[in-house]
Image (tube, rainbow, N blue to C red; front, side, top):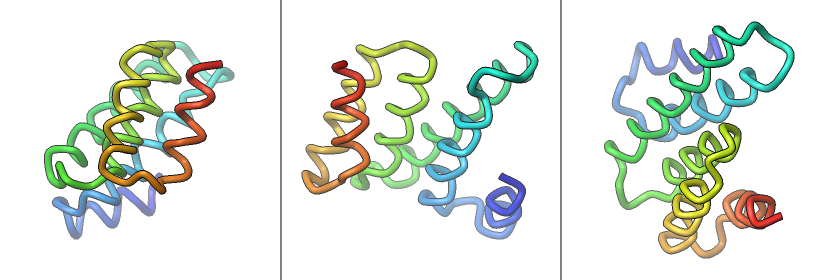
Length: 105
């Protein structure tokens, strides 16, 4: 997370770094931490995923990261929509396909 933060300080408009940071923050927000801290990580993860989508709307990574954040927050309908958008843009996006399947489960 710190390295991605450093990368974004140098290149704030690099969409793939926003998508990766979103995934890292959502992973860090998984059970085990203080509830307030977890909520902050989720909020930041969603914000970075949205930023990735805004910077590169034709790239699948931002949508997949946004789906990942929504899924972790148990907002599965929104997650499925984002994974489907990612797969519309890149049907071979393996992580989006896996995450979509897990959302259906």
